[in-house]
Image: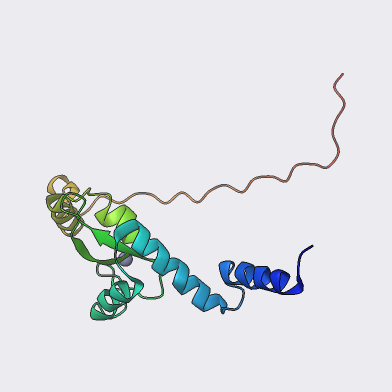
Amino acid sequence: MISETSVMTRGLILARRLNLSLSADEQKRRRKDYNLRKRYGITLEQFESILAAQGNVCAVCKQGNKVFCLDHNHKTLKVRGILCLNCNLRVVGGARDDDSKIINAALYVQRNPADLVYPDGLYLVANPPKKRRKKRATTRKRK
Ligand SMILES: [Zn+2]
């Protein structure tokens, strides 16, 4: 027979395991801390101290209120800083740790090579998408 205290203890263990007594924010913080420790061996406190040193914005696009990622050099595993998801995946991640690609991309955006051929600029003609006709509700019978 299972005693009443045994059931209560099991309930408390389950509640603690599921973090039922914690607020949603605290559960989220603990999950993030757990993931950072498990994946990278750093604490949420360390992550937040770097983000605070950056002014709580992405180190590249300087925008706040984003999903932030820990950016690191993939060869040395040295932490570089905190980036938003977009900059981590597309800007810095797209260059695959090759800083010359990032510098070339910045120069490319500033000085467009098409201007060498078309000094006044070559512009695309904007073609707005055509509106699609609504399909009729009734179907025609084939003869
Ligand atoms: Zn960014």
